[in-house]
Picture 1 (cartoon, rainbow, N blue to C red):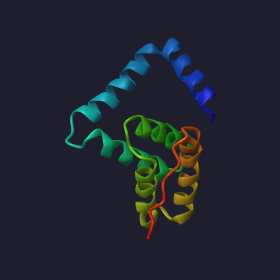
Picture 2 (picture 1 turned 180 degrees about the vertical axis):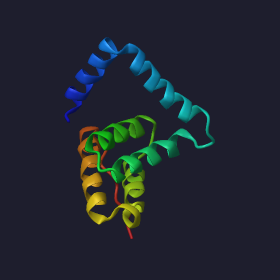
Picture 3 (picture 1 turned 90 degrees about the vertical axis):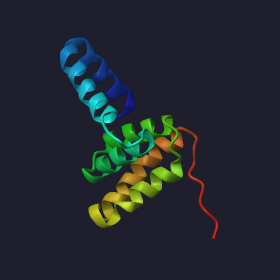
Picture 4 (picture 1 turned 90 degrees about the horizontal axis):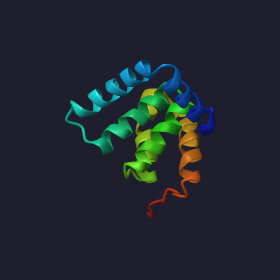
Length: 115
């Protein structure tokens, strides 16, 4: 689903079902705010979870949020790669492709390490 469509749907939910969306946002805030994991790490965990369920839209969303929170493209790629033995190579390749959709648009190419 394209970002424009997601934004339209989000705005429609916000207008038509404000209590529902407020509850969802409350769950999100409570899960982030009541733990010991920092934001940087929590964004990577959520990203890998999205990759695990093969949700292109969620991977896009979590990559955007991670970049906004200061996570580097290289860290995003590495987090996804770490999931290989758990979610399988095809799922990892798909998730890397979806992550690159956003990283490329953000103008933040991942820098490859030398050596």
